[in-house]
Image (cartoon, rainbow, N blue to C red; front, side, top):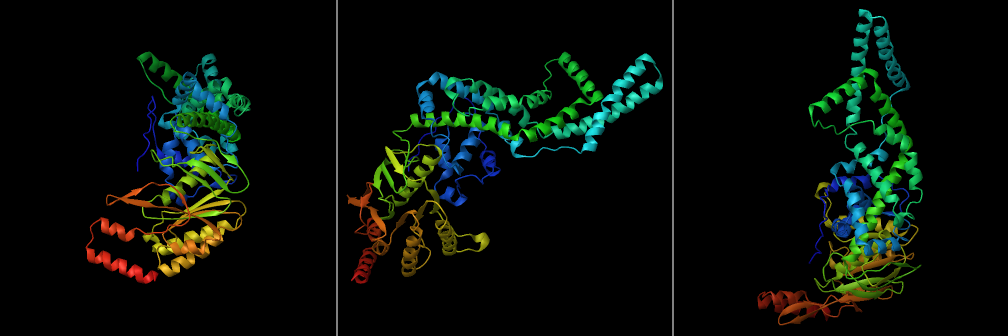
Length: 519
């Protein structure tokens, strides 16, 4: 299977998948239309799909795009942004300028910005805050007394308070060190968003962003007080920094500012998140515009109440993928076909296009018309040795979860490959028929593949039957990967043995047994 080549950006963008994923994991998922499960991600090759569509320029954009693909919204925020995407595609100079601006957030430290609104910041007790506030004033008072009335006692008290304040100052440094990565990058983020929000094409996106930037100004002023990246270019700079540090210790300025900053960060959590989301959204728009330019064709989804109709749909991870056209007429689909003929790839194609439609507001097809459906799958199941689960038991438990989901409110898309293949033929067909019938109830849609032609006969009244098949040319199998109406009418498993030069007596005996079983 061929993969699309990934175009490399002009700047060096770090890539830390754990940090990208952690933003999604720490987000509130209660308001999402659906959260894509780990099993479904495995089944749909989600990580490869993410890499395919990801052309972001910043760490913020990476995190935001991953979150939006996994935490599916009730309505894609890309819907209504078609004009902006077209503008970005048509104005390469403007798009390049925006990407360069966002690339200021391409440093690994930018992954930590989200912690400023996802985590709660430490606030000391009221008593401790009072102590810190009180300790600010004695050094100033004692210094004045020492200047007016130079006596050793004033000097001793000044030294004592200096040592006390130094302890508080460097304890504060330990707390401040936790924010070594996030705060400098947050200040960069604010400047990037200020610049982006002034650009005309983006005025309709998050229209309240400028109010939120103004709301953050008190916090930004306080955070700008801290230097997290001190560089001593010469001795004079080092001397000036040393004098400033002594003054900060003497008057205990940093702890007061830092704890007030923590209070503001806790209070302004939504505004910080809005600024983060704005940059992520713009980066996502740029990413989608670049993706669309590199595709053979694409379309925007059209939403209806029932069914699925699509023209020339293709799998986004397969280069020169053979497209297919389908009209379900509101019924579920059962696919039969030979080994390697494309059944599993096709059901993945349907699921990935549904995911892309709901999140990116685009599909890998010439047309895509369907209803919004939550996506569930059972494709790449494995036994679980850590929990002493057999392959069949894994299937049983996974399909039970899907049956429970199928009874919940809303439409569901179930993509299933060879269910109950971990058990004997008779019970596999019987249980498979019962489960597939139940899953297709309540307006749900099922795309299932099977080798069991008997299953197709049992479900002929409930499912639309389609198949993929092959031809044998010059003693080699040739697959056209084209979807065809009806069930498969021939088998190829024994023919494959013959093509691979199995002993003739094995081929003859196998064909003889098949003939008796079908008689």
